[in-house]
Amino acid sequence: MKHFLLLGVGPLPFYESNHLYGFGIRTWQFAKPLLAAGHRVTLVTCEFGASRESAIHIKYRNDPAIFGHLEHTALPEPNPRNVNVLLTRIEEIVKTHRPNAIIAAGSTISTNLAASLKSELPLWLDMFGDLFAEVQAKSPFTNEGEELKFFHQTLSRVLLRGDRFSTVSEMQRGAAIGQLGLMGRLNRFTLGEELVWTIPCAMDGEISPVKRDSIFRGVETGSSDFILLCSGGFNTWTDVETLFEGIEGAMEKNRRIHCVVTGGAIAGHHESGYNRFRSLISKSPYETRFHLLGWVPTEKMAQITLECDLGLNVDLPIYESLLGSRNRLLFWMQCGLPILTTVTTELSRVVSDNRIGLTIPPREPKQLSAKIVEAAQNLSDLKSTALRAKRFAYSYFSFEESVQPLLQWAEHPVKASDNAERDVRNGQLFNQVDVLWHSWAFPEHGNELDLTIPRTPRAVIRTRPQGKSWWRRLWGF
Image (cartoon, rainbow, N blue to C red; front, side, top):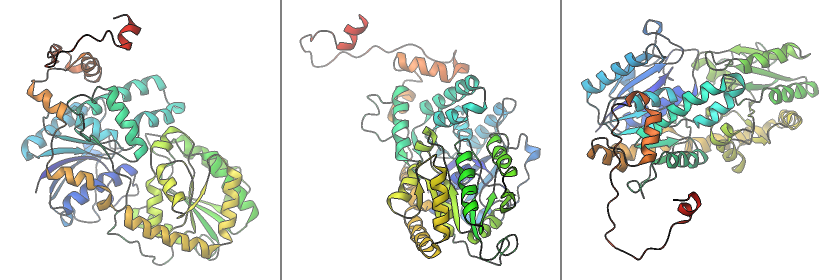
């Protein structure tokens, strides 16, 4: 049995909370299998939206102790005023609990903290989505220059400090390997060493939602109405216009169609997408058939999902979609809810290739409308597809199945070979690329960096000069 400090972001799935974001599910996706494998986990979460410790009020739906040897500490979300205090708190936990390694999962919030710790323990850093692609997706709504600089520096720290990395898709894994190469991490020390593993989004395979007394169907709608579901946050990659136009077009053709919307704006991150969706609804002649429920408790969310007929996921055709994933698709599969999604993410391609859901290309509102109307007329086929999807998800997308690379590393957590070599050299940097990126990523350590570049050892085998290489000739060296 090993002991791990796991840094994540709350709210977690076992809270009594009206909010459950992807980063909380991801944190628990890492924690629960580690506990099931017999490891001890000291779980430290930064609670999203809580700016100070006095604002944290957690009620557990389940006692954390039932999951295994788990100790949970909740801290506020980091900001410029408290980040050094948080780092000190976490470093004290490391010193007191003496874990074998540190794992950070679920968000750049946690990976950035882990990469900034004064610790020589092995680090597994989870890159939950491609940060550069997410910054690009958010760029129309922010000060792009400031965001780009901050997150570039943040990701540089993560890439330099991590010993193992995980991504949500094979596409993102390729991007991460390229980013590590840019940082100089693909060097002679890590040659042949697997640094990056794909851990796809997953669901808790030990839970199977059960339908109870109706709380929406037959109350807010007719018992035989065809109910669409849009759930979760309206993030920067949501194609709001296509989603609305597709639903409205279907409502125009079939008066039985209603749409339930749970979740919505992501406070402190992105609120304009949901606000735009609400504005479009307010001008629609079918406004009364849209039911905006906002963020609802986790247990109520499962019941609402079970009462619906079709889940809609409509993404923009951007790099975030190409490299990222969607937790909501897996939750819908787990509940047996049929899926209609744009083919953008790797997970949506799995849905399409295995014919376990309905799919359309992005930015096609008319196709979306047609698919909805067709689905409403073929309930039997729809339910049959949803059943196949549910079986597929439980077979291939459970927490335990998804984190096998992490569990294997957890048996013997080690540092990456280049980071281990740095320890041997007492922090001496390898070359000019190393100097460049460490100076950029850790400007606060400028006076502590050993900028002395070691001399390259002479080759043991001497050969006749072959002339200058092409790149030396190109640059005049």
